[in-house]
Length: 427
Image 1: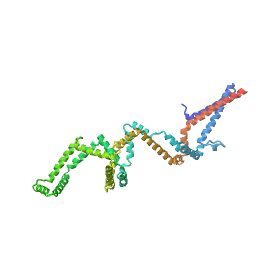
Image 2: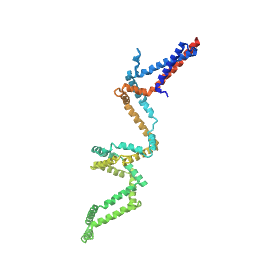
Image 3: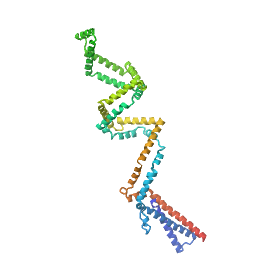
Image 4: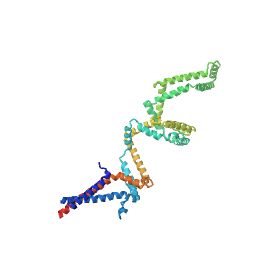
């Protein structure tokens, strides 16, 4: 099979060989029919056309040593600065102009692209790898003192300003309505049982019972005689009383933990639902309670310590940034849920797409000159020599230029044949 890079040379060689052979045969008298002269004229014209196109193509890439006109060859090397400026202008001001970018992204939907990506990534592996790669650089620095200080200052400043009452009420009511708060019940009651089993709790509670008994004695003579007599007779043991109360509390917690319909849980659920409804409705007293709680947290001297512990915990979770890490799984879940929600809400999706398009167009407009700088830097002779530039251009368009040479020989030959036929007809 003939190499496409040699088509021009083969076509020119064919025309030269045909022209020389026929002219020699005609001159020797071996052939004399007018058709041979027509064919010889065709090969002659093809030779001229092939040579002209050979010169035109060669002049682009290298110097052709022909007197007087050689200074018009080696066009790419001689005109490199002008070509660079023209390419920069073409890319920066035409192909990637702000208007062209806006027109290109006008029909692009980020939400649809994300939804398609999530659909293709059914197992979440690609999304997990992306989240992991984004979290990895930040994990070791989340608990740094500077980060903790910044987060604490921001939290102390912004927390009192946040309107958390209404969303907190709606969230709390929703969790109770769907029953997802039962998991919190189980965890909370486990903590209560563990705390009640601590021996130090018995000492604390016994002291409180004894203090309450003394306060009761101070309320009158009969109460003082009754409590005092019981103490002297040994009928009252505050430690035993504390242990009995704690045992009963542990039993109550155990009963409530395994029974979602336990009266204690129902009463507390009822109280929480009432409080959540008041928050959601904007009840002034309930809202003020939450606001006061926010202010106390923001002003607490222990806030920075709590933030440090939280950031350290997040840092430890972030350190496990493999695809199966807890934080990565949480990030993947949030991302998938958010994308699915946007796909189901056309108005929100359209708004996000608009923000994305404006952001991309804004970046291009603010940094438009950077496009030209990148192209100009890529074409800098210090990075791309003349020889390498010529080689790259030949690699990209060399085959097409060979077809130009072939077409020059073919068209020249056809024109030569037509002229020869016309000349014979006129004769």
